[in-house]
Amino acid sequence: MLHWKSIYHAVYQDEKPSALTIGLPIFSIVFYFAIQYILSEESFEWVVDDYYLHFDSLFKFKLNALSMHALFFSTMFEMIVCLLLITIPLNIYEREHGTVFTGVFLNLITTFSSIFTCLIGKLLSKLGVIDLDQNYIPVAGMSGWLFVLLGFFTVRKKMKNNSRNILIQLHRSSVHIPTVMPSILLLVLYNILQFFIYQKNSSLLSVYHTVCLGIGYLISSKETYFAVLVPPSGLIMAIERVLNKLINLIPLFVQYYKEKDMKRTFLNAEDAEVDELAELPTYQN
Image (cartoon, rainbow, N blue to C red; front, side, top):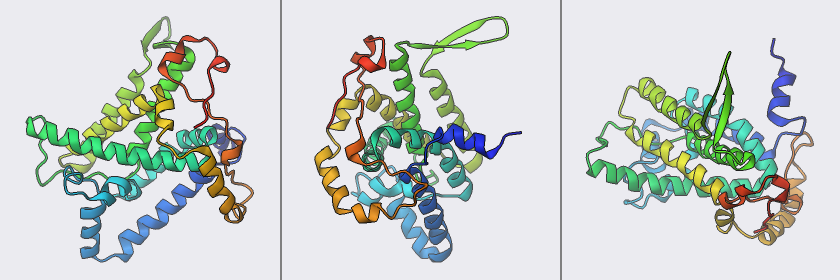
């Protein structure tokens, strides 16, 4: 029988849960119920129009939709699934990169994925590849974050192991498959499931998740370039000094990863030629 302590160990590896990883589900649940049960029907329609990502959000300059759609969920089921699946990869990322850095990272990937989704969605619609009619499902929720992190850690594993393939042991034989194959299969499965769940046009969602997985691949393979977009460590530490009293109010069972304690190791694809991770260069933005 699976005990809760074994689940905790698998997620947090005997360390305290990260502040952002813990705070995000709490905020999401409270925010979801506030949106669903406090707003009127007219107000909710306004939220869907202005804060959910539509294929034309970029061209109508709906900045809230481009940067904030991940904070909204269409259904409780979707919210629970996303929060459960994102906990482990987000906790690992926050532990390796710092709490504020992770928050900035999530904001940046939300915006980038929105821009590329609108551009690619519009192009595919013009070419007749997908049909973005009035019945398509707009994008909301953290599923995009999940696929970015999935792509990120897939490439990270590939570079750490210095191998393009992973070995799967079967009963009497072994099979080598590309390292990226499991993440691609999960993407296909997720897109198929959402089609049957919503029973509506999910073309935009499929484009969005594909873009997010690709962004995860790209960031992981060129992480030093992505780090340039994040505020310098000195600025983050200055902000944390100003907010130090508030940071100290965080419960003791939660770990806030301060910028001054972070020694982030940014990997690039060209660094994968070395054999050991310890030999890879360490970069500070």
